[in-house]
Amino acid sequence: MLPALAWQSTPEFVRVFSVLLIWVTLVGALGLAHPVRRALIVSARRLLQVSLPSPALGHRTPNLSDIDRWRAPLWIVLHVMVGWMAALATIVLFIMGISLPGNWLGGTARISLFDTSVDVTGGWTWVVAAGCILLAVGICVLVATLLRWLAPRLLGPSTAERLALAEERELQLAERNRVAHELHDSIGHTLTAATIQAAVAGEVLASDPAAARAAMRSIEESTRAALEDLDYVLGVLREERPGAVPSRTLSDLPDLIDRLRHAVPLWR
Image 1: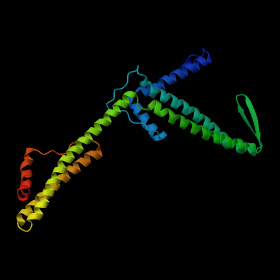
Image 2 (image 1 turned 45 degrees about the horizontal axis):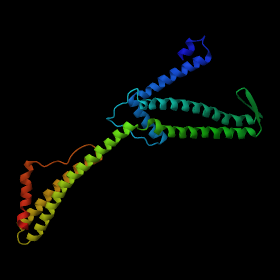
Image 3 (image 1 turned 180 degrees about the vertical axis):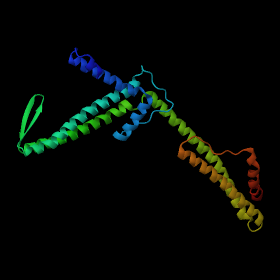
Image 4 (image 1 turned 90 degrees about the horizontal axis):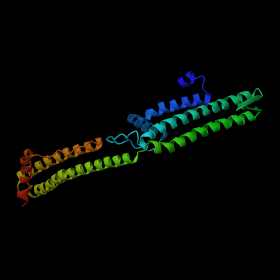
């Protein structure tokens, strides 16, 4: 409001234009900050119920010369302007809708708009009051529809962001495929060995109980290791963080040979 107060000698429309220009500049400048745009996207998703993906974490912030950089400031300016005009209109209409029926008992109500006055008397006050309430609701619906239409166009991802999001999804799928492959190798081999050992235990249960017990003990150890691998992978997938199945090292080789020793020779 400083220009309007300082430039008293200038024409009124110049002061109004200056105030609006400064207001638009200050409000729109907020949208240039990347965290502000993220907050706008989250609020639009929750308040307007529109589907907007979050910007890619590793995406580069556009330069001031990029047209996509100015979409968020334009959203803020339009959102505030439309919101204030709609708020003022609905407040006036609701006040009219509430006050007009009260004046019906007095017999006359006068509505003035742009130097034009209309006298509303009798039962017409209820009709005009209902029309004001319905018009206020219609304005709210119209503004919400307009903002839902604007949000994907001004807050939605740009071409560069779509490529970055596609790259992120590709990396996530590649990571999940790698984890699934490691899980298949780990648990698949363990279950294969356990199946062989179970068959061996069934064959030698009567003739060699000691070998059968050793095979069953090996099955227990193998399945316990497989469950540990499975729990780890499920935890990685739930938290959606990169990870890998706990890999076996050379120090685990004697245990693996010991488990297979009870199965392969007896199976032959």
